[in-house]
Each structure stands twice: as C-alpha cells, then as structure tokens.
Amino acid sequence: MARMKFICDAERCIECNGCVTACKAEHDVPWGVNRRRVVTLNDGVPGEKSISVACMHCSDAPCMAVCPVDCFYRTDEGVVLHDKDVCIGCGYCSYACPFGAPQFPTNGTFGLRGKMDKCTFCAGGPEVNGSQAEYEKYGRNRLSEGKLPACAEMCSTKALLGGDGDVVSDIFRNRVLLRGKGSEVWGWGTAYGKPTQGTKS
Amino acid sequence: MIMRSTIAMAMMAVCVSGCGDKAQTIDQSRAKKADGKAWESSQSAYMAEGWKAGDQAAWEAQMRGRAQGQNEYSRSAAPPPVAAAASQ
Image (cartoon, rainbow over all chains, first blue to last red; front, side):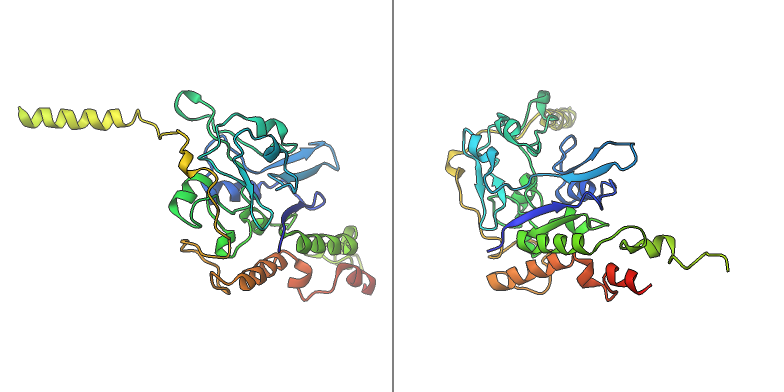
C-alpha cells in the first residue's frame, strides 16, 4: 500500500508560488488561509533557498496526538485528514505542528476563529468522495479521481514532488545522483545555449 | 398598498438573511464517521482516464504512473545530464 508523501527540492524551487496558487484555486481556499506556502531562507542574499511547505502527513502526527476531540484520522494511504464536524477550533494542533500546517479562517462572523483547515493531500475529508459537501468543507478530492495533488503536478520546475513515498524518493534520489552544475544542469542549454554557442571563431 | 407592503416585507427578508451564518454546532451522530477508500468511487465529473473506480490495483497503477509524470528523466528521450556533459 502506498504511503503518500511530499518532497520539496530546495535546489529547484524558484519561489514562483505556483503551488500556492494551484492549491488556492483547486480547493477554493478562503481568504487568509494558506494550506501551502513557500518559505525562503536568506531572502535577498545570493544563494537563497526556497522550500514549499504544507502538511507533511506525518507518520506519527503530533496534531493527531494532541487533538482533544480526536478529529484526525489517517487513510490507508497515510494521508492525515480531519473531520470538520468534530473540530472545535481550539488551535492545539497549530501549536503542536512543527510545519505550521493547521490554518484557521478568521473572516467569519465577528472575526471568530473557525474550524481548522489544512492540506488534505487533495484527498478531501470523510464526506462521500467527490461530493459537493466534501468540496465545500475540504476542497477537491483528486486522489479519488486518480490524480495526485495539484501543487505537485503543477510545479513548473518539479521541485515539489508528491505521491507514493517510495516512488517520489526514487525520483529525488536519481535526480540528486545525476545532476551537476552549470551546463550539466537540466534546462541550462535551453536557457543559455550550449557551451560552444556564442564563442568567437 | 398591500402590494407595497409585500415588496417591503420581501426586501426586509432578503436583507436580514444576509446577517445569518451557517450553523457550527457539533453533530455527534456524524462524529468518527468512516471515510471511503480513494479508489472505491467518486461523484466527481473530472475523473482521470486510464482506470475504473472500484479497481484498487488499477488505481495504484494510476498513482504510480502519475508520480512518474514528475520524473523528467523518464519523460524525456534526452540522455542524463552527466552523460550529455561527458560527450561534449
């Protein structure tokens, strides 16, 4: 059985926020809630690195451990999901999560903190797969459509990989072993031409 | 006169309905409900081609295939970059 995971390659992420936009659009995520976001280290300094962060669907999820109403559950594919009908919006999961994945909408009546919202690995929630009720609470259920998360599939540089942990780690491992620097890097020739081009004869 | 008051009442009803909010009470009967398997079925109108809902093996093969779609080394006929650099 597959165990779904995300991997983000900091060497490839160009901070385009395409993953963030894809997620917002795919799930109609409300204003103020970002299920996925791009974090940049040493921003503005040469050599800065960016990484796309969302729920990592932990195998031993701290959010699940601290939830006082036990609204979290794990699917057969290792995706950590929650039931918004059970969530009380207490925010414990937000403090427990090392990635800041749990989000709380604040644009409700009187600005009250709403029920928790987070990345679902595009797997929806406990409602019937692909139903309108599921869409309104959790967004699209792409896994039940035979698709992978929109953020990973839309990533232009394929920095963000999503899918079965064994498969995406093989892709990443192969990439790290093969990639080099300068003209050896994938796409360098397209962007800058081959090393022989442009030289004076 | 009756017409006017009816329209006024309807207008008031429309305006007041904007002040409402969806109920956020916890429905205990729905707590801990089981989620369906991803491969079992979906009401979505945007199903990916190449597999049929209910076939777990086909769904898993679909997932592996989609994941390989993220691997440009398997998508492109070009040689791996190390080999390409060595031949230059």
